[in-house]
Image 1 (cartoon, rainbow, N blue to C red):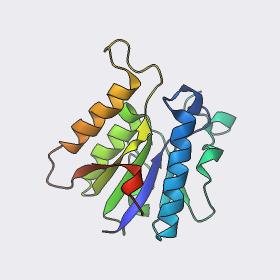
Image 2 (tube, one colour):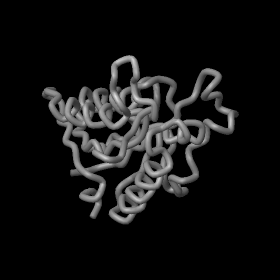
Image 3 (cartoon, helix red, strand yellow):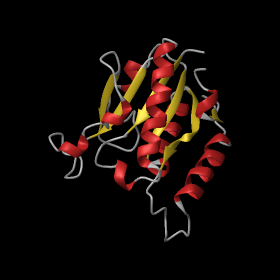
Image 4 (cartoon, helix red, strand yellow):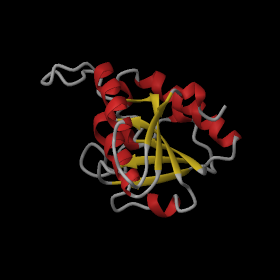
Length: 175
């Protein structure tokens, strides 16, 4: 296995609105430290575009809680799918497995996981390493925790000849 840790959109502007936002960023930072210790590249995706994610807006910055290092890679993206018109696929050319974390579970994490499998990557979705809006989805009657659990289940049941999605707890990865 040739993995890379991919962190989706853990940006300053989003942390206060994400279920377990600060806790999640800290968990991902610890996972990134362990990845680096094992020689695994760390890639942080950064949403840009529109008023909320204008490149010069302070909230667009990746969270300082991630403790990104100079050797880490930052890839800007303009869509929910981290691969769409970005440098992510090129950056991951020597990787076969993406360890996936970040926000939002039901948007960019989901889209990036599905796109990765379609590009023949295996995905390890970090069970406790992704989250969604703290409000959940009131219209659908789902709490944030239910959305995270549902996506863990749905993505791990995905059938695709190009790759697989497995779900693992952060404590079992890069140990």
